[in-house]
Amino acid sequence: MKLKVSITAVLLALAFPAAADGTVVQEAYEVALSDLRLPRAEGGTIAFKECASCDYRRVPVAADTVYRVNGRKVPLAAFRLAVADVAARQDEAVTVLHHLERNQVTAVSVELRG
Image (cartoon, rainbow, N blue to C red; front, top):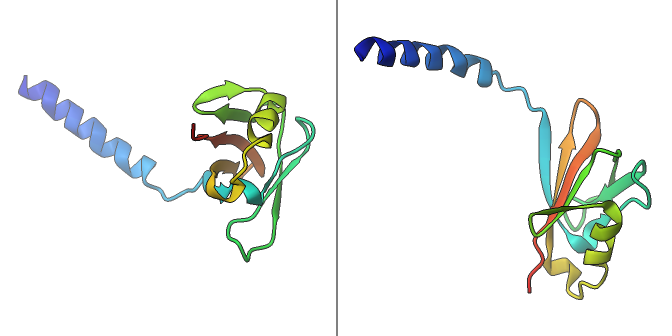
């Protein structure tokens, strides 16, 4: 039993330095829905502002970009429809995941209230 625990501890210790090399692969941005401009097509560009006084950042999307509404994966067209009728757009937060190496948005999600 001690041998199994020791082996597990050694393997975990070896795994942590590799995982902790400090390389950032994706950045997540939480932006107001009012500061988000969705692409018209799956191969387009999404634009968002990190803060109210910031300039818009434009990042490409692709066919494999995932859109989620209330945790459910939906196509871009359904995402656009879901957020189109939100009245208080500045009060709704949207999470945008940006893959830095590919310079592409990999996911956009929103949790809409009631």
